[in-house]
Image (cartoon, rainbow, N blue to C red):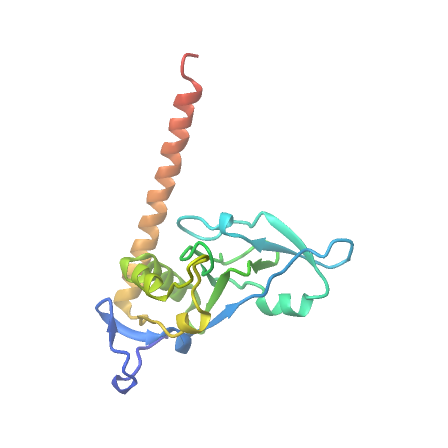
Length: 205
């Protein structure tokens, strides 16, 4: 279980909850740029792009496919695992998605994303972290860490040092409730958009 650091660590609290430092409870990775090696026999991967990242819930099947041969060892190192959290840190900063429990095939992140891989209680920790980063507290962290006049960017090293809520029973409960409520809201939104499209297509018919 992810516990809060002792008082002497100086982490204290965040969002009213005992805090831990991200790098102490998770591995933070940034993959290199992977391109499809045309004309070569290689392993097939699905490459996650920002367009694949849903507004809520788990990451859906990535649409782009690439073949990797010369960079296969690196691809294996950065291949996504169940309950990894993906976070965009270049250009459009702050988009978040969680890799599902049983991804279909082998997936890689785009080079503008961080992989956050928790050491323990990965499914629960991933949901808690994602909901925290989507909150006003996470928005403030992104605002403080984002730099770059032309292209916004967040440093992997700086991000790995942020304080996040420890995985207490309170945080587990609130994160689960918020995650499920958010999924339901966006599910209803999709249904309403489909209904609106039906109204438009049936106008004067």
